[in-house]
Image (tube, rainbow, N blue to C red; front, side, top):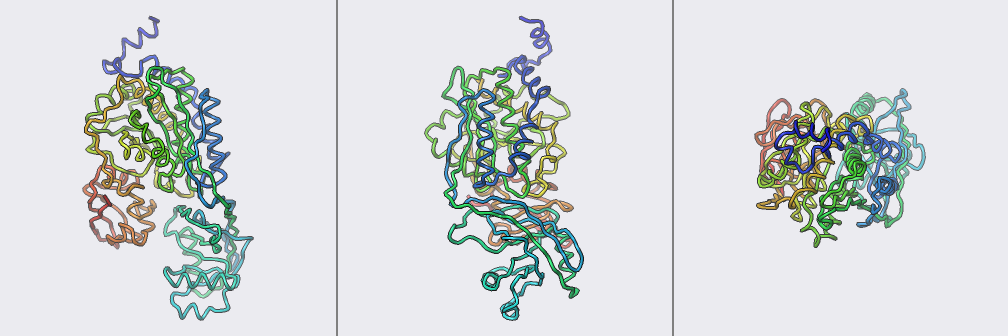
Length: 544
């Protein structure tokens, strides 16, 4: 026994001595993860070299190829791309720019949704208020050429207005973000023979207020937008990336470690989910560099189509469902750049989880790690749910720290500079340790009394926030920046501009608070908002 090993053993706690990652192995993980970290280099390449990775975009395919090749360079020769499906139409976003040219020059900050139309060229024209009824539309007949319309209506009138704009050569529509955050969304269900032709520009709230104020003062306003959105005829093949460190004793049993590789394309997809992708790759690098020989196979998986409904992971699980009895657990990092602060499982799993994470409990007193007992695995909107739905324990890490996830989540601020390098290194060490520890357990993680609440805290299969039918921004609290017509929130009476302060009995002031309350809450719960200075509480019920 070496002197180093004697020292390590003398100072190790009793629990650490029973851990499935030995003190020497943990020392090697820490050395690689903290002193030789490459996690930010992975993230830099993914977000700044490849860029945003919308499902069906050319960038996503490039990202899949890069991830596969990176795993191979780490020594995982079996790394490969596995096709899970295709989209009928691809979408690639080019540069976009907008400005007011009259009555004064002013840059306009805006976005457009994915799979929506851009301009064919820089399009400068008069901005006028959109009509609000059929009579107003009739009064504009013959006057819509080279015009941008502010604040278009909804429903049948919008359809008539779109037809008139297309017929007369109008440029498009300008709408309001209702906040400082520009959140990108969009639906891929477009058809090549019926592509969108008119852009919908969503202005940041201050820009919208400026233009609206000028028009209300009867001042002529001229704006110019140049939006290079491009469609590509499909089918567009879509892939997951898979790489295995083969198990030494139980090679046909698996521990999955992963995150989703795709992103929205309003920024560069850093905290959703470049951070989880880079820590997954870094965990693989750490384990390969230290020469880890896990008893079970550690399978690294980077899924795509997550943002459109967990499509890649669901397709993979469906295709491989006969194998899943031999999958011990799935660890998914998809909560942004805050450090991994814990993990939650059934109480029957706690003894095994304590052995797995024993080294982490004392890793950094300023970044504590806790194991929580839960009554059931509940959906919150990420790829681990594909596994829990199939009976495999799927874990979505608890996270904590100084980052504001709401500020970057699907917004224009989801860029490389939003990632916190200290947290990224720490999380990579936690993931590598957890993966190796789970793989080295004497038996697979127990499924005794495992329960999956398919309709509870997380709501519908795509997760609570999306099932609720809302978008958030963080302008002075957790504000509803959008309430989708026909969604759960709208049916309950919630409105755009409401400030969420409680979910059930739990106070919420951030997206992290909201997700935690959803995760732990029942299918039927109360949501309290502040509207015009008054507190309003309504019941919401997620589908079972």
